[in-house]
Amino acid sequence: MMRYREYSADKEKTIVLIHPSLVLWDYFEYVIPYLEKDYRLIIPILPGYDPQERSDFTSVEEVAKDLADILLEKGIEEIECIYGCSMGGSIVLRFLADGKIKTKAAIIDGGITPYRLPYLITRFIALKDFLLICLGKWGGIKILEKAFSTDEYSKEDLEYVLKVLNMISYKTIWNTFDSCNNYVMPDPINIDCKKIVYWYADGEKKDRKKDISYIKEKLPQVVFKEFENIGHAGLALLKPETMALELKELLNQGGEESVAF
Image (tube, rainbow, N blue to C red; front, side):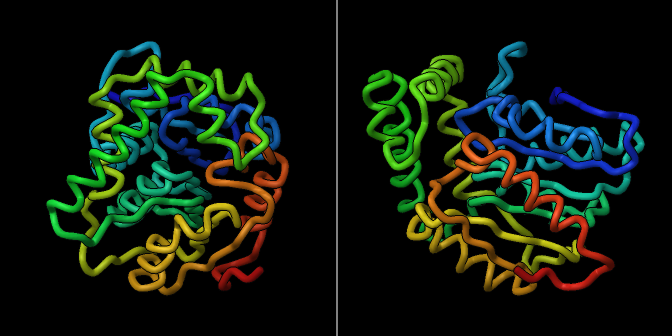
């Protein structure tokens, strides 16, 4: 079964944090200190991204199911919040749709929604994404510097990404992008969570256009928030205090009132 990291198990309220692709669970290492004093934190170590258990990423659907099973086995039937970034946002969407765990609030940070395109086109897109990531795996730090030029990542940050790329399998790369782009959601989508927010960065607004459109159509109750001067998946690494403050602000809003910013 999927492994996980847990912090402050004695706290009453639980937050689940799900990382993006191409990083490990320690993507949240700068955020943890801001949250562990008040909340129980559970951070899944996603298959394919676990350096201690060599495996391959399976699918958004399977990971969402395994996460719910882990929580239930721990006796957790309700969580305060689930947060997921990029690939993690896809998992959050499916987790909410499955409805196995009562969830008070959810944050989808630059989350990827299913493509609504003909099958052959989705194959072409999956191949393109696969080759782009493999170029980073083969090309080293210089390729990554160009790919991440829109954000202020240090050389150490990029070396971390390269280390992850060298660790994960080609099957994990393929499954990650193929599943995140093509996972199945129920139709209609019935989600009981009353507070759902979709975060996105101003630097990724164009790239998230189809995802925002999907969310607006399928989940009109979702509220959107744009963050300035940052790119995709940058909050946890570059502005962890901001991320933690925004998360706490959402959770501190009373009752089941609609979220407003």
